[in-house]
Amino acid sequence: KNEVEQSPQNLTAQEGEFITINCSYSVGISALHWLQQHPGGGIVSLFMLSSGKKKHGRLIATINIQEKHSSLHITASHPRDSAVYICAVFPNTGNQFYFGTGTSLTVIP
Amino acid sequence: DVKVTQSSRYLVKRTGEKVFLECVQDMDHENMFWYRQDPGLGLRLIYFSYDVKMKEKGDIPEGYSVSREKKERFSLILESASTNQTSMYLCASSHHRGYNEQYFGPGTRLTVT
Image (cartoon, rainbow over all chains, first blue to last red; front, side, top):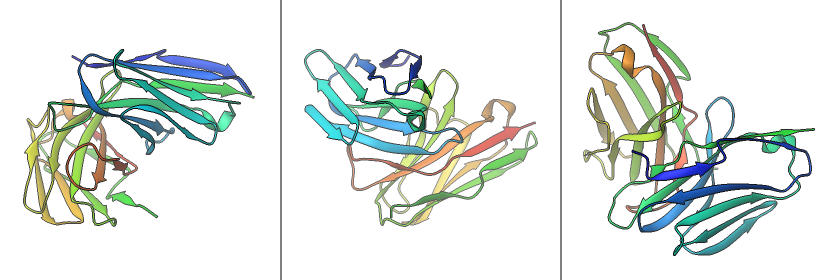
């Protein structure tokens, strides 16, 4: 049973497009973590959120605690953004992160 | 720069062999984690450690054990490898307990034949 649902599972976009990846979860959380995984396995942390919005370069992450939903936006997408994007939540009553299955993004030149 | 390293990128072992996967971090982090990643299932926590010689079970500890003798090093042991342990294994570390940003190693793709 996965408490974290990501959509879409797969996404193909043209270079320059605005991209949105969604993450929904079913429990109250203390924090939500967005991560990026490139082919070959390495995982990189993008954002840690507990409320509101964060921005780093062309990436924007938002979270709505009441609706139990977070979005990751990529503006002016580029082929180097092609990766799997993973959402993870830390439940209020838990002691570990729970991970979604990821969204595989391909950006075509 | 933050760094988590794992002993092997690819490993092939036979059923019944004892397998050691090692993880080293150079950030003086208290917490270290072992995950496995399988298609369609996301990352699942096997074990974690919040201090030297301390360990806690994650969601899927069966068939695995861990060792943390030094702060920077966290080992995952498969006592008797089985084919259903074929997977990508990822180590991570973070400061303190709770929901702190995790830093991941490059992963070890283990195949058990």
